[in-house]
Image 1 (cartoon, rainbow, N blue to C red):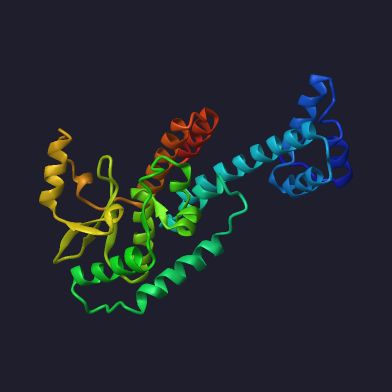
Image 2 (cartoon, rainbow, N blue to C red):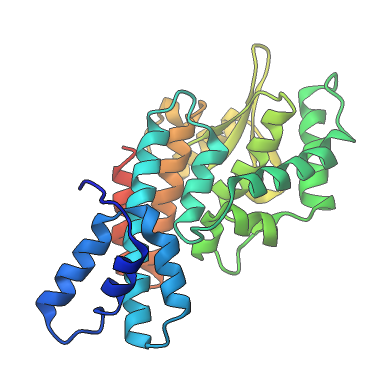
Length: 281
């Protein structure tokens, strides 16, 4: 839908009609506001602030949400088509579904601080296992990142801003924080799409082992994955052992978020997150 030129007086006039008793008028007003696109959001927010009619405020909120969601769909689509598909940007996009005003710059600063905490104790010439032990020590002992077992299915576990604030997350969100710091340290650490448990792998030409960020960075072997797959009665697949892409990670985060909303019975949000996921499949 082509965007039209925004006029403040026209916005105010349209908003004044949002409590009209005529359904046809309401539909036309809502369609008109939606046709103006995301640029109209600040004006709608201003109108919401100075309007004391609860019905009008709710309708403004609904219109703003639709506009923000359409913008988010577009940003996800553009992210998918970007070379490299920056992981932090992808996680930021997921978080903006719940926190539309969240700034990517703020996330970057928080991760820079965590990186600095690790960097002061990190030595690039350490053996791979020792590098991981240093990172584990800072993240899980010093900074106290931990598994959110009490509220495992909370949607906040998929929101990187919440994970950074509370220091609690699910397997994939903790793994993403771990991965982002490891990459800044030039460690060859990657995500692995293991069924029911997202893990990490340290992989270079000489060495490969696995890391469970959900269990304080526990180090384990390929044989341990073999046993895990056997217990699940699944056939072995390369994807259970080898690095996945940033796109794979964000797709899995969105699938987890869908399950979270299903658990709390918010089917409207399940449908919306499904649309976000479909935009990057």
